[in-house]
Length: 342
Image (cartoon, rainbow, N blue to C red; front, top):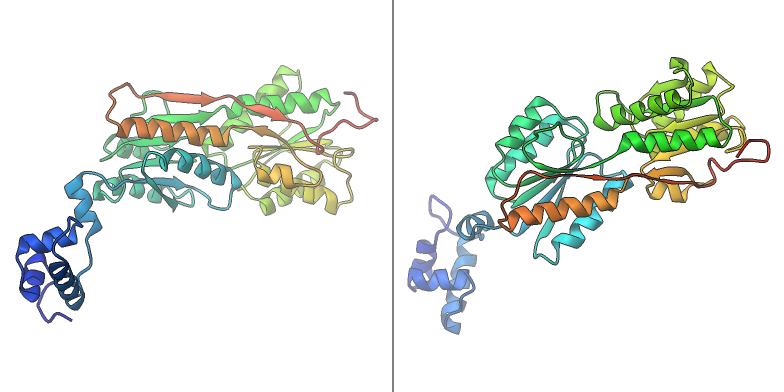
């Protein structure tokens, strides 16, 4: 082990191995040398505790060949679907994909954008569920290309791909109305989040479209999650036992709503129909399987990856924003029974 004051360098390895600095550089960079030289350099590097500096190499070469995907919740299958499609695009292009969980904390999201200046990643795909003025400032100053999966204000400085959650919620409420339901409750996510606002807006639009007044007693706002969905649904049923259906802002909330209904002995869908949003793996795995709005998670991941790779390819073009259209997938949790209109 070295006893020098600082970390080992090319020069100290050359001195220990008894070879030139140029020979050490060739060996450490994999450019080849005489077998005896390679052996002596590697032995000297090991004795001195030399560790290759990957960041330094990336600074010299200009690329790390790594991309970062910063997501709010590693437990949500929606983001797993995005990961699969992003990686499917990144791998053939010669990039590794790094995952970073922000837990939907704004400060963490901003830090991961600023970290592009450290050159540990060539580009970033970011999923923020709250977008602030500070987000827009930091994105505008990003040291590398960033693509946002989510809704950004007009004039935002980076490429983005979004879901049409408003239309998706409208489709779900129309379906519930068409199956004979009239007391339609809504369990939404946090009102200060983009998906929380947009999905609640779609619910209100659909009720207005059908000539139904918005009843605050039929709405609940909570955190995204199965337990939260169950608790919110119990509160709604306590306040109004005549609720005949509930639209939930994601599949985790909807699964919780089904649990709350079954715990009370309510038959799903005959006595309480439940619809979710995202059409994640949770929707397909439930019993009954959940009716859900497919918001194109995998497609958003694919488009985001292609946008980022295009930026890394050096193409010059205006900032782009893509929208993925929603699709209602009807399953057993809302299937019309014999006692309801179809």
